[in-house]
Amino acid sequence: MEQVLYYFWENREIVLIILLSVFLGVAVISNVPSVLHTPLMSGANAISGVIIVGGIILAGYASTTIEWILGITAVFMGTLNVAGGFVVTDRMLEMFKKRKKKS
Image (cartoon, rainbow, N blue to C red; front, side):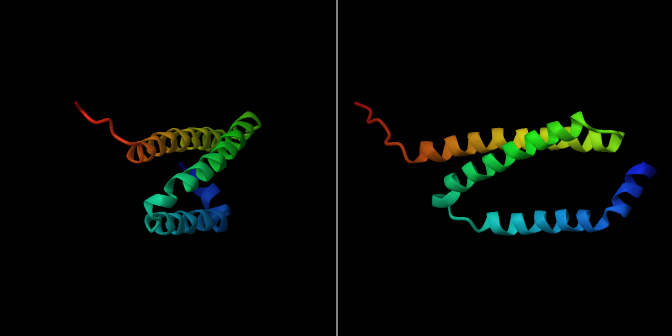
């Protein structure tokens, strides 16, 4: 645990930027109308794909345990985001399909 705290202290500027980015992302996404959701989700899936590849590279070349954990976490979170994006996009597209009339 001491290594993790030391790592965050040494890289506190990066950690601050990440935290501010999370809050900014939540603020921006919460105000997106549903019509724009699908195009934005496809963009987010593309970015998550890049994050997955970066996480795999980081985990593969990790020289410390912290780097390996960060790489695996990036792969896991990116995969969750891609899968969730596909599920949400599918649900959004279902809303726009015409329903069959019962006879």
